[in-house]
Length: 210
Image 1: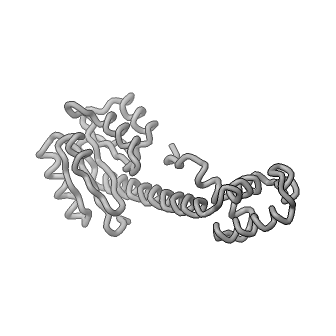
Image 2: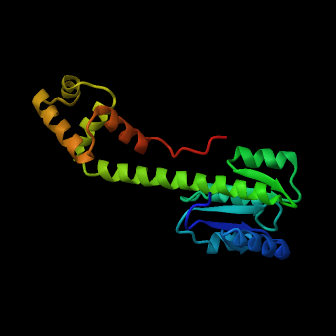
Image 3: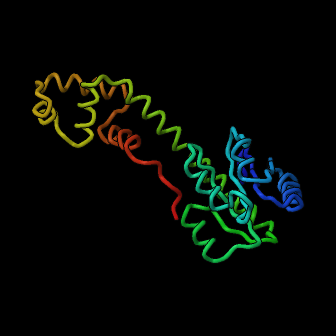
């Protein structure tokens, strides 16, 4: 199922193929936009909702694998589906190891293409939700004072109040008061929830399973 407001970008230097594919996608009810080069795409692509990129492997200046690498270094990290008439096994392996959703060859089977697009858009939705949760967790943690932050991280490590008190040179009642403030400001009702929130900010963004 294609998410509402989804958009598919196509990056291919073959204008005939691009026009045909954009027509196919729009006929399937999918918003699509074509770019003739990787540089043009990177400079002009805008997506507010779920999105993915269909990328030709062989292109002048910046090829598909280089574009995939460039996208991986951006904050959005749009999922990539490769479409190529010149793909070799080594290229497809390299693309998939780098996180590509699929590697299709021309002429493209419409059913396989739409399935790959659905998976790519689903992956983008997952990444968008992860970024939202991570930003929310970071915003909540930023509400803490420096002392509350120290208490928060020690509690998240599994230390008891008396152990936190010894670590920070505080009294146990003071630690208990800080801990209550931490739980209130972070809007969590258990140590387990606190640990999950702290880990969400600490851990690197999860990549798509490969």
